[in-house]
Amino acid sequence: MTSSDTEFDVICYGTISADNIVYVPYVPTPRRDSQVQAEFSRLGGEAATVARVLSTWGLRVAVVGNILGDDRWGNFIRQELASYSGIDTRYVTSRPDVRTPFCRIMVTPDGERSILGYWFDDTPKSRLDEELMNKARLLSVDVYGQSERDDAARLARSLGRTVVSADAIWPNYPLAGLSDIIVISRDFLT
Image (cartoon, rainbow, N blue to C red; front, side):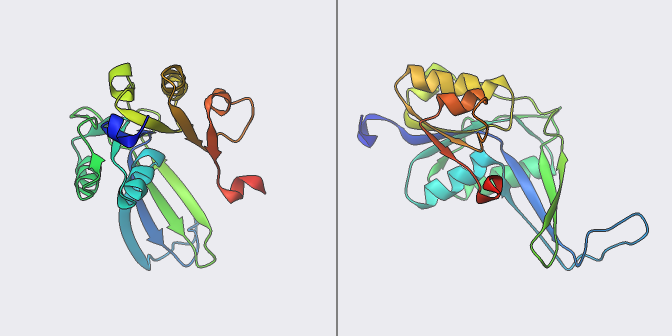
């Protein structure tokens, strides 16, 4: 199968969120507050960040995963995704009753990160279906979900597609056995 045989090179399936990065001199404690030195927000979640990078490399990418809310973070994510011409966002769905997941990440001068995750467990997930998977050559999927991630990988494998997963670090993860390629952070190796 060549790239001209499919609408997309890659479907990025999984977490779609925002990261709010806050630089602090130290992590606050109950008796010691910490003043913010700098702050910015960016796309977060494996599906969104992988889609962003692949689109800048010129690949045709569809992103699908958790449902977004009609809130500040949902609007931010939709605007950021739309700013990349190679990302197809028609499969990113929104609902007014959903709170969009995001992370607040405190970073200290030594590079250590302390992360607060908001709403990830409560966020409904979209299912990847055969019609969409048939439009791509490859599935990129993360482990940060529930059975829908494994189901997506099984579907892709049944259709003869390559499966690349992120952070399936334990051999007993179902996604590890369903993946052709596993990408992990060096931090998981130590």
